[in-house]
Image 1 (cartoon, rainbow, N blue to C red):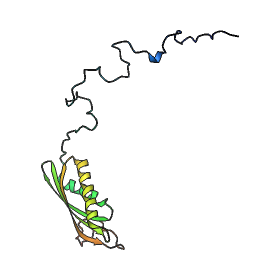
Image 2 (image 1 turned 90 degrees about the horizontal axis):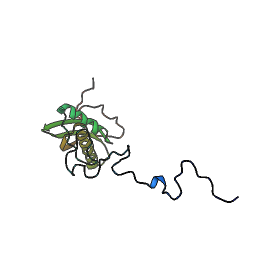
Image 3 (image 1 turned 45 degrees about the horizontal axis):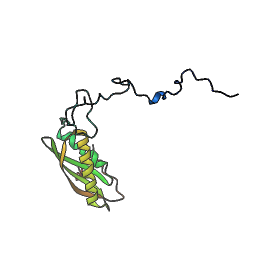
Image 4 (image 1 turned 30 degrees about the vertical axis):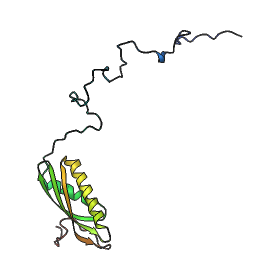
Amino acid sequence: MTGTLPRRANAPPAGAPPRHATAPPAGSRPPHATAPPRGTRPPRGAAAPPGTRPPRGAAVPRAVAPWTEEEIARLAEDAARRTPAVSAPAATVRIDGPAARVDLDVVVTHGVHLPTAAEGVRRRVTAGIEAYTGRTVEAVTVTVVGLRLPGEAPAPGGHPGDDREAT
């Protein structure tokens, strides 16, 4: 049997371009398109309309939360405690406007390279405080006040120089 096959009911007429290749009528937009028509976007650097997100990577001003020095000191101690080979951190924080300065006393495991341990503490404390509070950390001073021998149990907390028992 020779000849042509019958055309499907929803197929385009012979010689017409396929449906996906046709452009939408001028001025119409598909319902899923979210970008405004060309030429209607605000210029670069202009403030975004209320209720919209800033572009990725843009600096977003953050309000400085009303954190107390004691709360920031607890954050610093927690961040220092998470640093390997560091135990019993005791922190003192001074707040000066939107910035904070941290002094930390720590006990380090014997045999650890002290500058490396201090730098690890400095980085973790700075990142933790800036992430949680939005404050800039101007300086983190790390003082090693003791060494923990390999067989000793880590101190339960508090100030490393305290000989008092925890109650």
